Amino acid sequence: MEKIKAALAKVKSKKTGFNTGGNASKRTIVKTNKTNRDIGEINYTNTTVVKLDAAHLEKNRIVSHLSHNANAGIFDSLRTQILQKMEENNWQTIAVVSPTPESGKTLVSINLAMSIARQPQKTVVLADFDLRKPKVAEYLGIAVEKSINEYLENKATLEEVLVNPSIQRMVVLPTMRPVHGAAEKLSSSKVAELIAELKERYESRVIVFDLPPILSADDAMILLPQVDCVLMVIANGVSTQTEIEDSLHLLPKDNVAGIIYNMADSESKPYYY
Image 1 (cartoon, rainbow, N blue to C red):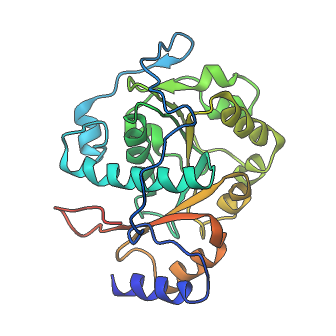
Image 2 (cartoon, one colour):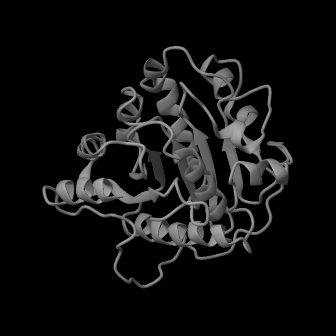
């Protein structure tokens, strides 16, 4: 934990406007969409609907679909801070990244998206753009025939690859298999068109991208210019101080929505931000 604090302090001293999520000052609650109207129930007639297994979710520490769960409250607080920051800056898309693998970014992505979906004035898309090692579908227990893989191969439309996990106001854009040439695919016009279509469909939609670790390849850096803001997940004892510093230096200083400290060695409180 000390090396995380040291790395953040070192980078913060060199960057103005740097935000660490957990130290946000008190602010007035802002509207969650321009009309401030509840969206209500959505009928997913043109979207594949799958039922999630509660035991599978619990095993994988997916908790934000349960409003009464103590750990869900942690992500609800994160959600509020993130949405306030996004509203203030007119941001619609957020990328969740980490310095290195095994930091818990996918779990944060999923739980954050589920928490946003419980906001009656928001819809959310969770897109698995970690094309080398996709995990969203695995953690959710989703098994579908068409996903981003088929979309990128021009074998499926966007409508055919979107999945509703039986949660109102939430859809998932899964990647079922590792994608060959991930960096080239992410820099393609096909992906740019996909992101543009996701953003333009609904004013109330928040798009959460689960991206690869910053230092593992150039994949995340390719996609970040197309995303409004970034949430960094740093796991205690996983990344070195140098790796944390290097990752933070690569992020656009004015677009960091927050930083998560994932306390992986704590059973009672696995997340702190």
